[in-house]
Amino acid sequence: MHQLIRDLYGKYFDTKQNLILGTYLREIPSELCGLAEFYDYLDHLHTVSIGGRLREKFWKSGIGSETIQLMIDYLFRETDIEIITASTMPGNRASARLLEKAGFQTTNHIRKEDWGHAESTDAYRWFL
Image 1 (cartoon, rainbow, N blue to C red):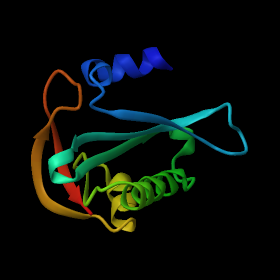
Image 2 (cartoon, rainbow, N blue to C red):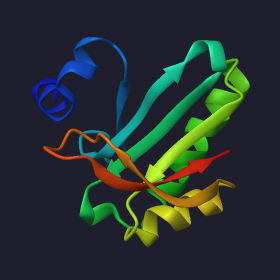
Image 3 (cartoon, rainbow, N blue to C red):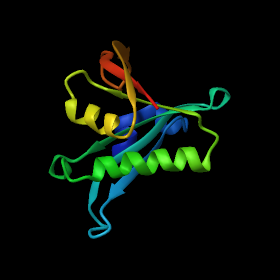
């Protein structure tokens, strides 16, 4: 798992700019369902971004919604975070629906983001 995370996030993991957590079902605690991530933390602005990825076999299971809500609840109850942001690729309606369901609103314009690929990725930015 540690090597997988290092391969995915390289310098960000090593410099502690991100916090990446595994998501699991209570019923099957040994099977990784996906990843939940806190990134782009800006202490002086009291803001952080959240993201996540689920293995395809867990899509439409409710895990994504539950994970987002747990992350939001933690940030607003246990930290001094005032603004939470997230990003979605333009064609990813499932992720957009999860964010809308959690109360996020989009800026409705595309911006370039560095998601660790060779080139920047087009993404919508969301705010809560």
